[in-house]
Image (cartoon, rainbow, N blue to C red; front, side, top):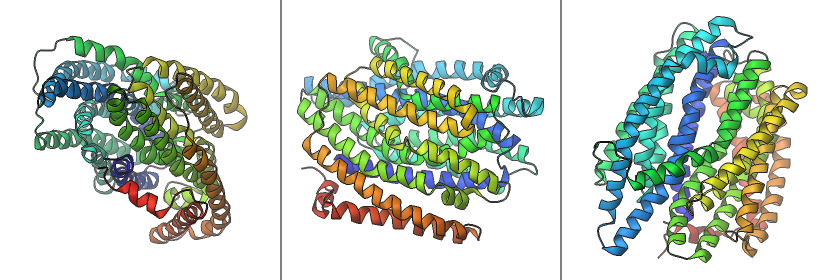
Length: 525
């Protein structure tokens, strides 16, 4: 598959998942709000989410997929037709070590839920023992999701390696369906009871996602068998690479964890929830664009570099940067300019008040200034991982995390929760600058004339769209107090109109031609 087709497959299913996630968050805002129960659940949900991003989806995608592909290619080169058997045997060795580790780690974290939550929140000085006890209880319920989703990511990495991107991209849909069902059908009488129902739904979703991936692997002839755990040379090599890859891939999550912890300790009740709801919208372009492009180019780069074709690898990264910027820049402009009507239309209902809307919109605008950077991090890091270099992104990510911590400590006092968003955006841009600088210095990436020529056109088209959205958002906000269908229709007109204007401006400026788009959508010969 060519790059655009692969990204379209991943991005399309991610879009379905994110739309369902938005519905879930709308329901959560309605039934749980932005108070004590919401803060407690979001702290509990942050922990397995962090480890999922670090190890399951981050490190496995960065380390396991290139190693699996190399095993596949090397064995087929030496003896045609044996590649899949060799790669499958490697995956079985990894699974046999991973399962007992996950069981032990999950048990330890569940037993240590109290100290872990206290370390993150300082015991919720604003909420007292009741809020802390609820957060601890919810953490125990949600943490098994980590083990389940780690196994999902192993199987998903195998399917991505054989170009079955859609199966793994569809798995998060099950999580959102479970959580929506819990909110609509099984919610409790109080906000705290509803939060407990949500926590149970998280773990149930992990079971369903694992079953989905097992069935998909079987359908594609991939059956892994557990054996006695053994640290083979290949498994040892993977473990050496996986720890730094986890830190490098999880820079954004680490930054958000730091920000959430500071908000829980030093800001007023509701701040954790405002940051969460803003981050949910902020993460939308990252999921649709950054993860989609990064996932698609990693197997391509691994094969091109492995076959000794640096010119093709440079072209792949240039086209990935081009596509990422073409999609991410207008998304950033839209989220900054139209933050208030978007938050108003999506979340302001039931327990979520007008004051919550204003507070959330402010931090969303701050977060969204870093949207292109969040996406570019996902596009640039495969340039290291495809070359089996997981240490350099870690060093650079640690620098960015220090910048984020210092920025939070400086900005959280004068700007409150908005300072969290500003610090996160600044640290992301620092990370991008460092990643690109090292790749460029090593000769692994060189912007070509096509990328440079398109960049200024993309900027101008995004600016045209931004002006139109700024004018339209003032009118749109007055329609956001109506029924849900009216809100959805207004947001569809606002965002759809902005996207259409951006597309027309891009065509008028020659960023892309219709013929180029048709050609990119075709399979390569």
